[in-house]
Amino acid sequence: MTDVLTDCPPNTRAFVIQGEILAWDPLNRELQIGTHLVSVAPSVPVAKLKCGVTGTVSGQERTASTPAVS
Image (cartoon, rainbow, N blue to C red):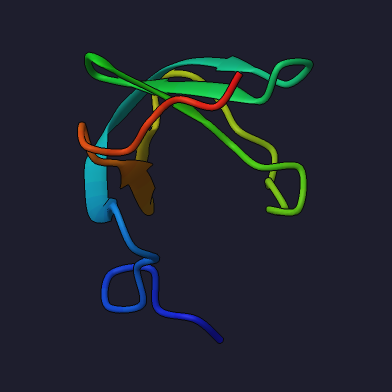
């Protein structure tokens, strides 16, 4: 199993967010915890999420120096 906090690809940084789940869009696989909106990859299994419960999300995000791909 890969540890997302220590095995980051180049030009990325790891994050962990914990807080109340404010919104979950299963069609677009977008999850909002506090002010953070994260996309959940299709390969990540998602249990039944409910708004109003506490959740923890960890993952990786591109750093500002990473060029956008269009």
